[in-house]
Length: 109
Image (cartoon, rainbow, N blue to C red; front, side):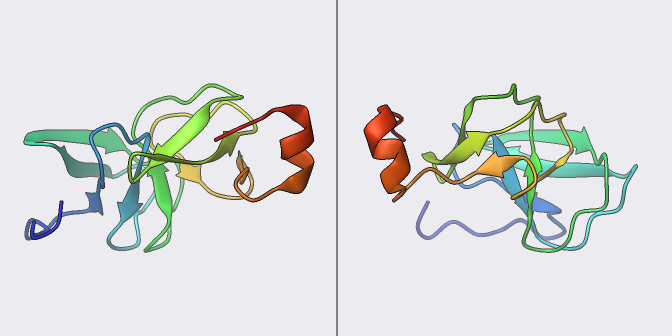
């Protein structure tokens, strides 16, 4: 994606077409419709709760126990079901990279 520009007026940015989440480019308010591009396709999602600038928003429903993708890479494991348009953060996402306790259980990113 190097060299690509963020569309004027964009609400959130998706880093990779495989991603489950987008990054909020401004504070997002519960109830508003947020638009974002996935590749060349314009999509939208209703915001389920206030989400601060720079935080993640779920693009689609994410089941509990799913490896969540951002940048096309696993950033953590969902600890609960996450509704599309919901805030994705430490309250519903557990980081699994660099965790020695996970190495013994065979959990891998």
